[in-house]
Image (cartoon, rainbow over all chains, first blue to last red; front, side, top):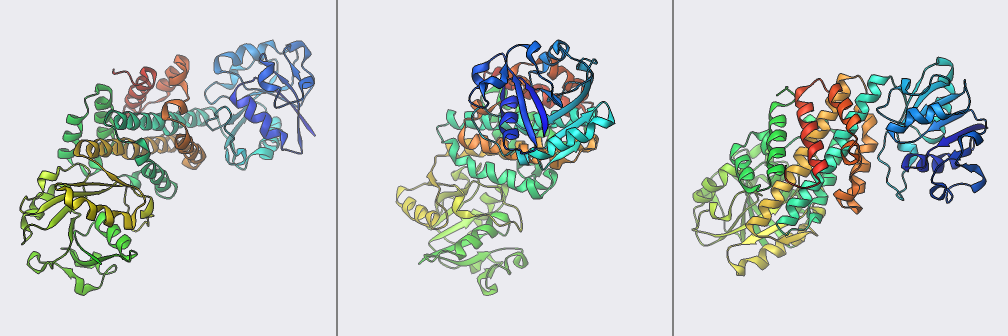
Length: 253
Length: 253
């Protein structure tokens, strides 16, 4: 049985606790959480601590806190030479205090409070300072996910930035589409089949092959009519920039 | 039996021919196509004409050609006072020659050659110059789709522009994500579970509620690290503008 301690109480920590609860080879021995009440529904309360000095011995300590708290939390750990990993896509491995053996356990997904996710589909990117720690990290990751990758810092950062484009920025396109619908009194629901088909296409075609529309066709008449229609300056600016980007087809502006 | 003539041979025309072929109340009596060979696999070749003067009588003529050809095609029709509709999201109803009764039959979807779509899920927006023609249009649309809407020109334009955001621009985010992955030698495949979850979220949450990430959190440290990482100027420009848009949360720039 591999023993884990999870430090944190946010979305990532909560989803990890739930995912490991289903694994037979892994035991979440303890969770450190300043907000004890958010963890109580997920774990026996005797296993929750709010004091670093009460941390018990474990095979891996997973720090799942906000990016800017990772470094401080890692220095507060009252032990040395154990395996300590964090779950962030953008924080370097060196931000972890070097009194412990360091690693990365980065699940690439958008977690929403209260919304279940199928962890087996979630890619997990792993890094370890010492090669000898990698096998253990991999073993642990593979008990919850079928998509485990060895990454290096550059690859992990690239994935994190790409994730911003395909998740946050895609969602911003949905928000603007919704806003245009509201302004013109049409239900956003009408767009949902198109939203689904857009994603379906990119599951089998490359995004370049999947592209259609006025920018791709260089249909200046429609583009100008759209810009005329868009009274919201933010919408118009984004429309222009993304139209240009499609027209340039990957060449730099 | 309602008789249709479809004019055009592109993606929309082809998908409409296939959709109506399954309807018992509708008969595609004829297709006008300059590229006869693209239609032959879909329809008995005796029903295909390349000559406007050979067009037969029908209840509705559906012009499914490129936006800039709609007006010219409608003037070339050798008859008057029949119901003629086009399938474009952005061309005004007035672009159709007024010698005929005019209408709009706009299916809101991205059509890909050779890729089947379930037409029953595709929203169809309808408009008619004369109220008396609307019922017939609606009857025809409802035989192939469960999502039929009465729109006006402003609503249709708004939907068309929103479609550019949630389809073309979303796909451009995928293209850039793919490009960043390629540049850093990570498989784009790793992002697909995140891409799917992003869409799943917006099926039940509003895009505003669904948003996460550094821009939403106002995490300037991560944003600056990402901008440092993005050596491609096009990516950096888009990153900045969309980060601002998320931070402003719908307020104009």
